[in-house]
Image 1 (cartoon, rainbow, N blue to C red):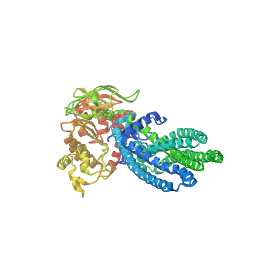
Image 2: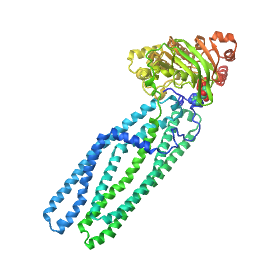
Image 3: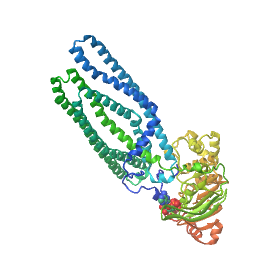
Image 4: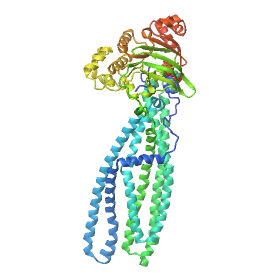
Length: 638
Ligand SMILES: Nc1ncnc2c1ncn2[C@@H]1O[C@H](COP(=O)(O)OP(=O)(O)OP(=O)(O)O)[C@@H](O)[C@H]1O
């Protein structure tokens, strides 16, 4: 992905304007989340959860049936206690002993089988749901506008896709089924308990209702902690991702220690968060133990005298005790399952925030198709602001005819990259229109328009694959001959063949195993293969040795041929051959024309040119880059 949010891996100095927009502004971990301070929107999250459950209703229904059979089978053992004591032992009905024993054994086998089948069905469904959700979130994320990536840490987004999606396991998986199963068992057990002794059961019910109230309060308190945990996790991952990506810069400035401290602070926050939730979770678990104890006390206090009075048989009391055991197990597990479900809901809420964001192509449906273009671009009184009230481009109007080259020059921060981002439809004009072949870019499908774009930037992003895969990135189905053909045109072929594995050489993350010049030529080959109508070039400011320089210029010359090209220009050769030069200052076009015209005009362009060309033969250094240039001169003198 091409965007400013990508950290500089190369370890080389960044251009000043870019450094500003890329640098993370503080040492503190940033949220990078939409509505980070908001509380969990349980209602909306439940809506999502219900949608998920509906999608997986088949496996959930099978799971529930299996669960009910399993639980019913589990009730036979406590029920049989009464018959064993009152009938087999009390009334000497020895003929009933074996049938009861076999029934209990059979029920246990049924319980084991249904339990096994249950986890098979439900766990597979849960994993499927996780994969689906991950896919859904990523599909959404990749369709979000470039602006979104400028504002959010990569790691935070990774965490949304991977960790938060994992949590939904508890909603479509064992969590929710166990919860339902637990409630079912509890209700049946309660019915039996009422039948056996309603007074004692009323007392127990009071205890359980009080416990239920306590649990609700506890979960209300725990939910924000879980939400916060997801946030902290995402922030730590985000920062870690930046640190590791920028490891060369970290090492070059010796800031390892500072990074360690930032990380340590992050993990400590995570630790505090987990510790506080552990307190809450164990408090609820202990609470349930206390309730079970109190229930035992009630049985002693009310059940004992009832047997003595003859209101209950001994078998009934034993059965009652066993049913209370059956009741207490789900009550305890409801506590931990509730915690898991709370966590899942918090994760789902964070995912929902992303899923609800409008994507770039949401509006494509109402837009016109754009299968072929000539490539005429027109800026019609375009103004643009990143932040309200701070115009970055002001009333920019120009025409770039199909096949022509427009060179952009101007001070650092004058708006060159912003102008180009509007050509790529990464940003939309605040005022005015950008037209392609006379049609407003706002009215044509983005997907179609972007298929006509090609880019070669300073920081060309290569993926950790082979050279061939990187060239074919723009058209994965391209045959090898075509890949090699464009590689020859881009002057890559020779150095690629020099590698032992040729085109199958792995370039490393972001192409670290290649030199800057080699990366650039691969990017040119990639653009050639895409065969775009509109080309964006961001020429490198750093000087390459004259041989690679001329190889790159030659390759770029071939690439530009016949395409509408916008180039943030630093090479005199590019500027001279451009059809028009736009000189930008503070977001305004202050001069325009060909090199000869602008030189003759004797204005801003001439000043820039004369000031820099007295000592630089080839490079056009935009103001703000003088320091590097001056250093170059010093080096040259030395
Ligand atoms: N994502 C952004 N959010 C807010 N402001 C931005 C963003 N990107 C750039 N800017 C601001 O817009 C202005 C123009 O920046 P831009 O990158 O277009 O200039 P430039 O001419 O390309 O500079 P350079 O040659 O140094 O790259 C600068 O003041 C910059 O701080």
